Image 1 (cartoon, rainbow, N blue to C red):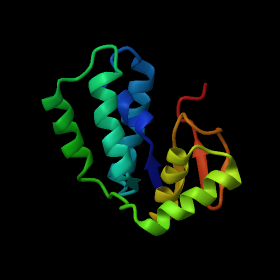
Image 2: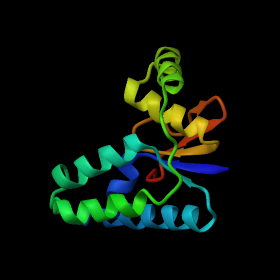
Image 3: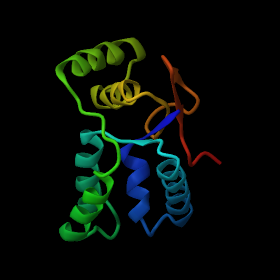
Length: 138
């Protein structure tokens, strides 16, 4: 029943230009953390730092972004290994996803997640035992 959070959902935690998405991301993360169900990967932490310091309309200062990464890194984080990379390549072929999205999928699956919160994949798509949910769907 774990919930895997993709980078784009976490970035909204710091995006003042999207208040509805910010509130939704906060709600989902708070609930998942409170229930001990949140899951991330090193890839998410890396992408998060880059996104919040470069891609927001008002980028975060590096020090604030580093604090956010330190806080997020306290959550369960699925480590990526060679086997997972090879499985991501197979997932990429089978589901016609990008390699990076496939690696997110594999991290979620290996971590026992049943839900992947992301804007990047098709809402409602099922990949093995993982269901994709775009939490910002109207």
